[in-house]
Image (cartoon, rainbow over all chains, first blue to last red; front, top):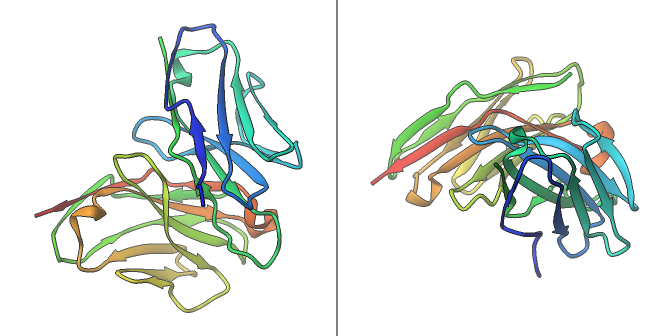
Length: 115
Length: 117
């Protein structure tokens, strides 16, 4: 049973460019959340997707957008990259049904470096 | 707004000994969920243990146990018989139940734990 997978592992971009990060949820999961983790800090919630719609959003600008596909996989897009966007981007998947565990399973992350 | 605070940026412990990591949180909710996540140098965030606020009994998972003090809004993690593989950054996290089991997690700043041989 594959866990949460993310691609790419590492990415280097230049200021002003756009980037797309990808996430495949754990089998059986239908909800994907994205977090940004700056070096030495705790993850910060960006947004969450369920049924192909953004359900919750954290305090991030509109430069951060996402998408969820019918197979529950998700993309995170960041436009007009800033140096401050350099971070580890984590994807977490979970199941929306009741009576199941409350766990969010995390992927290994994508390390984005903006130069 | 809910907040989570971990006041110990770094800790170390000798192999086989016991260590306790501290976490405090702030919320006006009566029911919520608390978690400890482990993030080794490999970066993969792993759930260590979870506690539901309406349960008075402290959660235990093998060598990991928590001391949940609801009135004090304190949620500490005790690691017994520390092993070298426990070396990692540990994050305390809070989730509001109103958003269901898929709601956003609010993380603390983390505590880096070094287990020494």
